[in-house]
Image 1: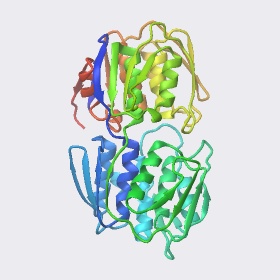
Image 2: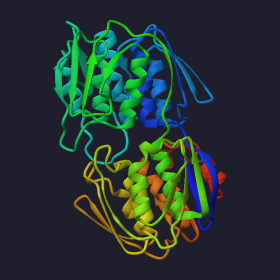
Image 3: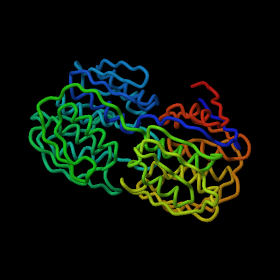
Length: 425
């Protein structure tokens, strides 16, 4: 397996382009199953999660062509069985369920895998699909879904224990676009990725209103057409590099292809911690300068538009060397603190208890061999390695390759000293 060597002590400077959103790309790619016409999707990041999704689409019978960030998909002749050997590798593969059900009237999807960051059930996905007419069985680890009499619009409340479900909202929205009548999703997820999926579906001829609010209305149509769509920027990649700049920039780092309105959580907390964040007039470029006297602060994750759970690990890494005491609470995934043990190996002073991390900033971290446990935890270890004394060795690099396109090359572009060591599978 590949590992990353980060030689600490090098200052970052310069600019990079932010890739298209991994979390937006996955349901949009799945939504291509809803039409027999070709769809063209631009700025699909070249990461392992999108590669797995394209393999799943190919296995379902789609014609797939990919080049330079552009994907062309034609789902003219597809079948409803998603293969276990691919689905098990990625939790987001569950979002093929809604489109297959809507298009073919049935679907067989293995219970998916993914990174281990606590309980991530799919019961709300199934609740939503059942509400509009699906019959669901579980057989041998496969979810068997049928709608023999078709799908019929209903009002569905997707409220969950830890807030709205993003992929559950996506699944129901994709199924409902071809249902008869009107579907109303209450307690819908408001994330920018949900909005981007709605834009994609509407460009195919769907009738969706309210995406980005807690109430989404979908008027069913009989068929969808092909389309051409550009995926939104990856707000989590942008936030990660914003934190990297705050931790390790000599003067300033500039990020291109961003969306200011999607980065409010990271922006507010970086400024509260004493760093400088400046957007251009159009909000698609941001420059970050490290503060002269940074201070600790508190973070509590929440569904959008609150502070994203996908950024708490990166901020924890920053707080590890920020003077004072910082408090990081994850209300979405209270078990998502596996990175803290690895940061402690590097000299961080972090205590984790019941979904909250108390971070006492130390002057400097020291390099150590560390192990990535999930996608965002691995990003936190990369950030820590940028400023640690010595060479940090990050193992299980496949976690970071799930969601960050060419992270080592982008760090090199900013002046970091980093090298990828190729290993056997």
